Image (tube, rainbow, N blue to C red):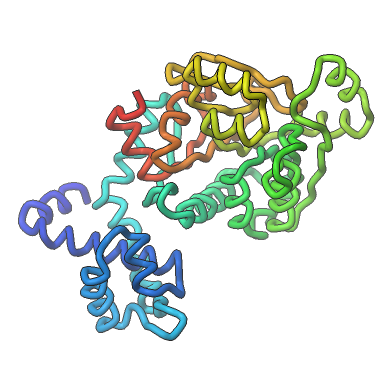
Length: 345
């Protein structure tokens, strides 16, 4: 396949450009349908005139149709779009980039989807679908505990999981940490509940604040309900978490102005599991928290990290210096290109 694509690019580079452009139009319509031309042009960062040329052609081929609500793919359009996935991944170099990214980050697996999450939230939906299919493929049958973190990325992922994931498996979703204080919809408890509902599974909640004094921490972990859930977390076989921008996470957690100033002074760029890192991967701050700790990942067989968008590239590169080598990173082209070109340094 690589050789054939190289020949095609050599003899008809303009053809490759046309195919790529039309595939991306199909992709965005599939994400956003029904969608009007103006909105689609804004999302794709192209002029309405240029877009009209492509959509008129695709409509003439029976691949899309329009109504007052906007454009949608026809059955033939959907079949064509999904049929082109493998070819376009090769053409756009995504599979090669997955291997290069994994080698650069020194982890075993990277899965990259098209687009940039900074420009379209639909990219996160695609990551959720990729996570769902990957979990279906990898997880063994039987009883499994899945520990999940909170956050906006995780909320997107939860909506893309399906009940097929629980076929042959008895899944229990648990929050990987305490997180009361954040917006309810992105707390780890809410994410665990949403994933359980989407997959027709069980879940348990952990109702404790994230920022605790040593005295409060020691007292809370002795509470029977907390102790029971912590026992489930400790025995989890699967972890799904995101990687956050350090200052965004600090503000979301309503950390003090002094702490935020300290994080700025120490050039923190990433946060995961309550630990903040600078661009070199050095730990600059830790939040005392109840729940899963970074060191706990060493004994958990299946670890999935999800982070996307060019703006997350520095955070990804920093955190991955501490991630277990067996981590599966799910990201997008925006973050991948930034990491591979060295823009995170």
